[in-house]
Image (cartoon, rainbow, N blue to C red; front, side, top):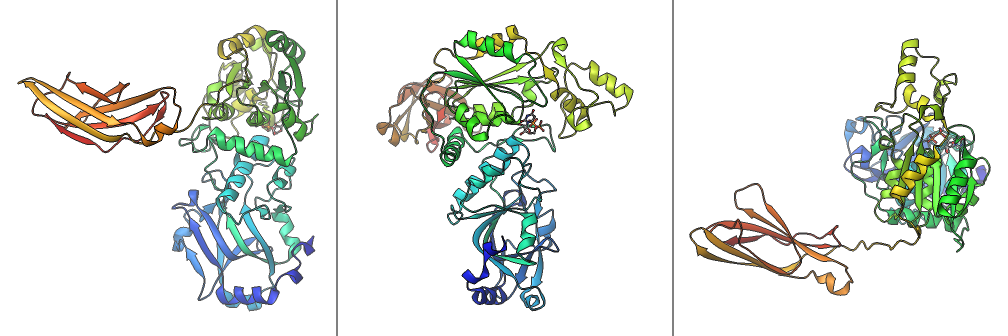
Length: 535
Ligand code: UDP
């Protein structure tokens, strides 16, 4: 392994001289530790001290140069989870002259991306926190190409799905533990530290109850391109074939107790064959292959539902929730399915029949057991009909309820499917356009006074420049009229390129008028420069 960075293939003397003379150079993006990614030349890592080292010389650069604010609370987040105090990155500083007294550095010639995986034992976390952010961080920096080296500093072992991380570059990713085998002082010739948070859509409830992020910046398009990339790397091609429904089951906990009955009901209702898969019984590749051709995916709430990103457009993701869990409060997969351009249908079903649930009070706390709690608290939990909102990650009532097994009440299950799903031809949805209108051009207003209490305001404009190249089903215009000095405005939706307003228009008054174009009801364009119109 240690010959992986065989120092014979690089100009060792030259590299050492550069490090000694130039020291470390750092230039970062981002204003805050939560949105920062840093690029380094000659960032080093001391494997004994488990610390990154920045070597100062006359030529070293540190931008931003935060002084002690670098520790308030950190230079940056090493994982994609925002401001988590176990995921901070910083470095120690040394003068480059100290190198004389230190172990000989081992130089890493690859361009490296240094980061923390957040929870590499859980498939949802692997995709949402690691794979997507790594993939799009690599897209952001062109030297993070297929030859880039990923370095995982969170300190975990490979985990159950390490093969997925291997797909992101042609080089074997390295774990923190392995760095020791290369030497006492490693110096990364070129490295990026940190991950883009642009692709994440969910916050897990560390400071407020879990839910969709406040400002989601990813659309289904980027998710689907990433999914296609993975499928290509896995040599999965989507075959045309018959329609079928996949039931993704769990085999160790959160079970569906009447699986056979559920499969039969689905097959009869939709006149399709059904397939069951589980992470325990199928390879990940074969699961993706199956899901990528499915018309519907049915699964208990849980990390395995992240595979719904591989469903074809128009398919349905159906998520089942155990007794006393409110689906509205646990929406990572609903949010994913509902991203614009994801083009999935989403249905949640919850068990509302207490007799149909099987609880496990005697299990260890992390599998939802509650016998370690005070008697009174146990009784309160058992009597409760819904888990109240809570923070991550050790709420015993939440764990107790989410690890129940469930007999799915077929009648109520089929009811919600019938209510929500667009049948037939689940898969054959039209892909909606996402092209936004440009500004309307040459906006003008004309005014006239009819009488002492009567006036007219005519507004006209030209179509946005891009409209003449587009086929748009519905083009509308929105006009806002505000009397100068007032802080409210009247909005109007109009079908044509001009309109004369007479209601609520007063003589000898100044109006401010904004106009924008709207495609297909929800694709809003920008407002043109405001018009000032005096009656
Ligand atoms: N898991 C599984 N089968 C099971 C239970 C769990 O494949 O019977 C997987 C699950 O998909 C996830 C990991 O094990 O990737 C951890 O599961 P956990 O219940 O801790 O998390 P959750 O699924 O609730 O996010």
